Length: 463
Ligand code: 4AD
Ligand code: MG
Image (cartoon, rainbow, N blue to C red; front, top):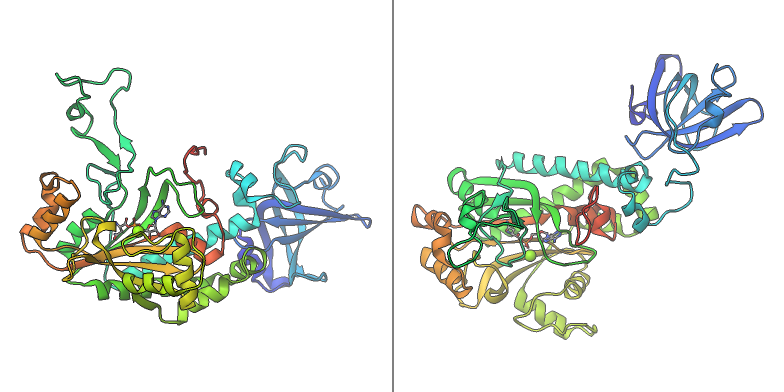
């Protein structure tokens, strides 16, 4: 079986020889002259292959004339130059086998437009659509580009644990992992559930980030990155939040905030360049059908240096702008998505915001000399807002313990993490890229649920 992508790239004629392809029928048109055009798509590329099947096929009337959208077929044929407009080659079928029929009365995908909302309800069939096929191909290319970017720079790919007993972001929105029977939990003498008798001997959760383990490994082998699923149990029903999303988290020893921001910028630039160079047909599709600004934004990310500003400057710029905000920008408050959008508009592209107030950031970020900000950075991308969050880490034992106590955390529960500061501590830094937000940035897809194969959000874990 050949991929349609490869077949379409071949020159027609005798040397093209016999071809065998498999795919799903998109359309069928019958000519009065006793043959049919059947468009077949196999998802290897956006384009479909036009198959010409005639009455000379023994099963023409029985099978070909009954083909409808979604049926699967295997076709043998000869590749010839196509007289029709729109394609260079077509396949003259010498044999056509119908493998699985799709009843047109009930098959949920039909020729007419279908909303993204409806497609989410049939997430198992949406890989057969143009839009979702293109999303999956770009997502796959991005994953490849992530690994090559880091490998080329000497970063070691790290598989950090999914199950954890520590809360990295300190936001308290984690999914519990337990084998305790909720109907008959083991109890302590005081009546409370005895989590010490749970599977891991302690309360365990799905990780919100691989960072803490990445720090441990970076402080041994220098440069690492994780690329795995992370979980947040927040009840956020927005266009850019998932309960399960994939994060890329590099961590570097002997690095400060500036090195971190430089790595983040080169990383996004490399991903943008890779998609521009390798996904031309998909980008053209998204530009025409989904968001006409997507290619311009990618080209800007690929070529224009990112702006930099401190959080304090960002708040001033927002206050000085004549925009109306739902939440007034105020020093000490989180940057809302409306603020992030305006900042990228002011800068005309991606911007790195640094030096946030300590009070709105997690315990592990390095406290700056001013005492009230930390060496944090967020990269804001046009159309997305925060796409990367990262920081230089607090490498001083006293300062880290102090940060924990200020947040009501007990340093005793983070013994191993503190050991990294107790023994041979070094300045180090890293960040996390939300992989789905990057796929959104590269496709222009408005809702994050449409850039991951099977989204998990509050109330939704079907498929
Ligand atoms: O800013 P966050 O929470 O940072 C961390 O988790 C750090 N431990 C990363 C690090 O320094 N190693 O998350 C990082 C990125 C965000 O910028 C965003 O792109 C994405 O992860 N993200 C989400 N994406 C989808 N759904 C969610 N609920 C997300 N929460 C964060
Ligand atoms: Mg963040």
